[in-house]
Image 1 (cartoon, rainbow, N blue to C red):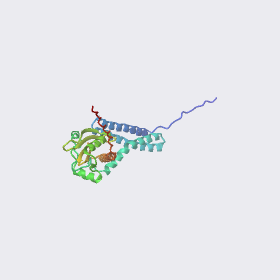
Image 2 (image 1 turned 30 degrees about the vertical axis):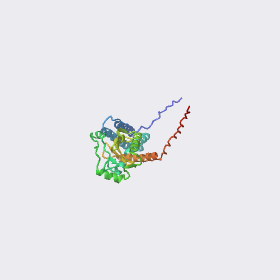
Image 3 (image 1 turned 135 degrees about the vertical axis):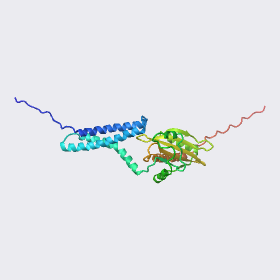
Length: 285
């Protein structure tokens, strides 16, 4: 009886370039997450976090180059690894999409970091001033006329908020909106005589990296109404990529909406007063 010989099934080898492309993409994700955690939880200063972040972007770019080289190699010699290349490209696209959008914003928007509704007399950073004295931080003083002109050209609709509400109620509405946003309130002073000016200072965070941006709000009386001025300034970098203007605009919109809702509420009716009982008659004996 003839013996049967069965040769084992031979698979094509996996492209080493495809494997490296996938591994670099995964490592870049880890580096991005680490850089975000460093900033959000304050493990290190901002510079090491940014170095880690930009290093991760560089790895993602290198992963794309290796993936293209792996694709060319697979096309020529028929090795396996297309799945790894596609996975690497998906990860790299997810990592690089947001920085690409920020680059577009950087080229499109003015290079300012301080936005206010009152450029002549902007709300001051008093309690927050001590947090803006470290290395690489922007000063607590307003950025000046250059910033005001750039802001006016890019965001002409950012103006003082005029509310048809007493200064005490305007202050309460503003503080309620600040707390709803979960900003870290550093100082809050309700209006007190004789000037009756309310002040709120808080720290906001950018959505992804969590960079700190300081906010100062001033509520002043205007006869029976009130005026609210807002200032939002990045603590680091000479440009905010539009984040401060977006924050101020949204707060202005919410303040106007809250004031309209307050004014549209029907006045509470006074409880009816029970009629007084007639005095008891006395019988003279």
